[in-house]
Structure formats: structure tokens, C-alpha cells
Length: 275
DNA sequence: AGCTACTCCTGGTAGC
DNA sequence: TGCTACCAGGAGTAGC
Image (cartoon, rainbow, N blue to C red; front, side, top):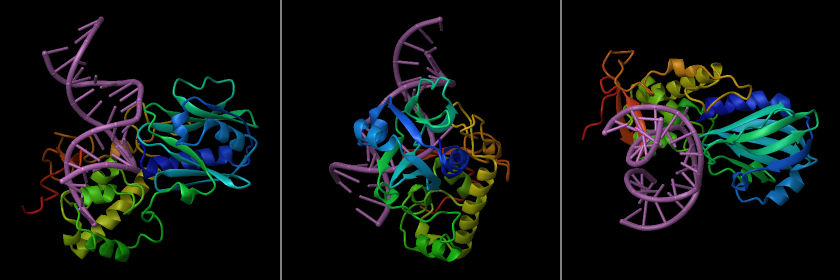
């Protein structure tokens, strides 16, 4: 599921439910969700600690614990997080559960088991190399222009690369490229300054609009921590619209495969590179 | 440096 | 209805 807008939504909603809460006990139903940290050590260190803060970086959710530890969560394809009342059933896919001192239980839920909830001393120990936050102050037009110029790589795989820009995934990359009218196979270093600016603007606009709608939900997977679906899926202009008319020109949206990822585009609005 | 293939998992769905 | 094949929001690794 989750890309930057969904992860941001999760972080915003669980933050007020966790900050200040003490963990009373820990249940680990699927040890591999801990990413190599032993369940024993995880239980010992997390039990009794208190949430100090919750924030997002790229697609990671960082939960700071008192006095000095972090839980770094990544939802990958099917992960969710929520806080439920203790008398409510956790469901079949709660992989890690933390009982809180106010009667709530934090669940890390993950059908496909790709997600992780890693205990570390500092978040930076868990993060791989991450590019700038696309909605943050470092992501300027000037930086983006020169960053594109320095990469001899196709746009779609480049935008999906978290070490280039942090937070875009398969859906929003397709939406962003369509909004900027750029073909996913265009070479980054050949993008003119005006087109680079259009792409920069599209990235910020699409992600912000999706956050405003609490992300996108189109199957049973992604829900906000309160169980509500997001609504940005109603704004998709190409993703999942194969064969349907482009909202800009009316031609059928095409699906191609780029780097093993399904890729949706309008070949009239997004002109293919020569060759 | 950048590309492809493969891997980790389960569930939903299209097609027969 | 039942079976099978394929597909999916991510990303690390290996090999070329």
C-alpha cells in the first residue's frame, strides 16, 4: 500500500494516541517483523518504556521511546498501524502488539509480512540512504534540476529510488509523471529545466493533495488507523485506469511494465523518448 | 552507475 | 464451484 501520503496519515493519527503512553506488555506473533531483533530483547527493552514522539521520514514511521530507543516501522506492501481498545480482538494479522497504560493496544498489522517494526537506539541506524523529503525545504527546484541532470537514468525507476527522493511509490510516481506530462522512460539527464520544474511542482502538488485526502484506499489493505479509507483514489488520473480515457485528451490510458512495475500513462500526453 | 531477476509473503481475482 | 495462474501499494540483494 503505503506511500508518503498514507504513511503521513498513519503517523499523524497514531501520534496523539501514543505520545505519553507507557508500554505495559508486548506480544510478538511473527518474529520476523522485528527485522532481526530477538523477541526477547524487543520485549525486555520496549516493556516499561514510554512514547516520547512519533514522526515520519520517507515511508518510515519513527516512534521515539524514553529514555533512548526508537521503533522504526515500515509498512511495505500491506502493513497497517492502529490503536484499539484492549477488549477488542486484534484480528488475524496483528504481528506485534503493545499493550498501553491507558487500556489501548497498539497493533502492527501486516497480511503479507513484508513490513518491519525495528528496535534501535537511533533511527539513523535503521534508515538506508534517503533522499530529501519532497515536501520539505531541501527539495527546491534548483536542487531538483541539478539532481536530474546528474542522473543518467529513466525517470520512473529514479523517482522510485528512495535514495533520490524519499516517499514516492508506484502509484504516486505514475500520477506525478502524468501531471507533469513526462514519459516514464525519459532519461533524467535530458530533461529540460522547464520540464524539471513541472515535475518538481507535480511531485509536491500530488503528494500534498493526497495527504489532504488521507491517502488512497482501493482494496481491503490501506485504512487510516481509525479504520477509515482515504479518498485520493478518486483523484487518480492514470493509476489503475488502463483502457479508460485520459482526463486531459480522451485517449485510452496504457499500461506498460517498467522495471517490473506496472506503469500507467497516456502516451498522447506523455511523449515517448526517441529510440 | 544502472539494469534485470529474484526474494520475502498472503490474499484477491480473472479465467477456464 | 473449484482449481490455477497471475497480480499487488516495497525494497534489499546478486549478477551483469
